[in-house]
Length: 346
Image (cartoon, rainbow, N blue to C red; front, side):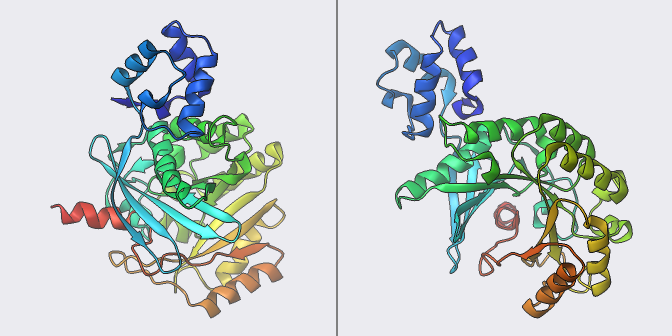
């Protein structure tokens, strides 16, 4: 059975028109789903009984259920959620001074093969539908409703490569961004990609207001190819050309994500190469403390080393931020809890 969350407002109107319903019914349905958080069609008291019966027969609402959760001492919550086909995915809620941010998964497993990432411990099984991603948000939002809080920001940085599931990710963004839906502002939604250049160019042509983040993690091809196989298909010169075109045509600031790996990409030379790579662009570097994964052997840098790398970038004319570490006392790395769960079943 499909989830009704798969449909954006226009698609709902088209679906309901096929049932002989007027367009305003779609707005009523959207309001019930996202403003009133209805979990069954029978709650939708202003819809015709025949329509409720038809919707109930053809669509589910919530496509996920909780398998387990881990709560960090810093307030980070990692949810392991089960989809309707039995697959499991993670969603991570992080609390910042500016609000609650939810990290959303876009694929069951990942095929990008980044050597430091727990997501790749289990290979990709399939893409998530837009509605399954919406389900991650709605499930967590239901938990926050009890605390009179809301999901303020969405980052599509969980398991999977969002631009390898491009159409569903864009549709997901349109649903959670809708004024009649959760009304999460476009500039509070960030899509992260490891660098699938054709999709970056397609995204640029769409002139979306969503933020674009690039998982860079290395300032030269030799190192990036070793830790991120995507570099073999789209080397840095090709990637950077596409990003400069995107930035110039969309007038949007880029984020370059850079996980600091001890003894791998954290030297002064690496910092200066990184500065040379992006200096002059409307961009900044988000330096990310590494959540260690036993299976791959990489280690995080200490705070002193991270601050030094930050200082080198700033002195060489590149703006940077040093992200606060979250969930260090739980299975915080993307895919880590799911991998432990799936491997434990074998």
